[in-house]
Length: 195
Image (cartoon, rainbow, N blue to C red; front, side, top):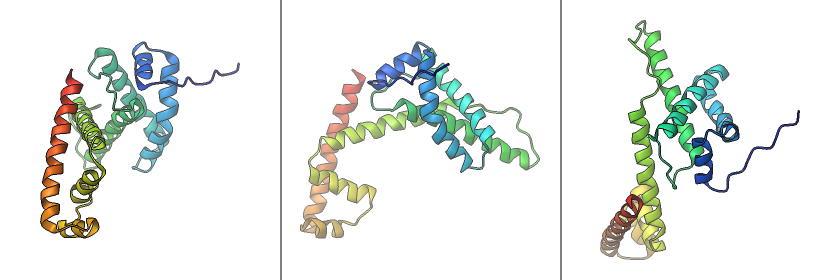
């Protein structure tokens, strides 16, 4: 029997809706696109192939249940495969933590399958990062560079002034202006997402 090729979803929303409708091919697509990289990640983080399979199944089940119950809603800025990977990753990290406890000779009262509060915090962080990225894309190139150098790369104001061929005081005031613009764009983006 020839296997049918996996579907290619035009948008993340199409993929999400297929998962919500419990389409078998959507599950196959998710498995094919998440499991290989997740298995590699588990193998490089003290796990076996069997561990990867178990953690993947638990994480995926939890993710799909959260889609079904509405705990996880479609987020246009988040890739579904990335979110599913994070659910599975959280399961494996929990398993590692409980394994460390067992090796110390104490057994936990119960095993956590997954801490959904942590996953929700991660998803909220993902929303914030996405909103900041969208806000940065709306800014002029010089502001993007300046904020990236100062806040991400932690370059000193003096060095930024040299790079931009400006006075340090001017860079300081420009950084403040850019940060204020970023805040304004961020507020616009998050208000728009809530509507």
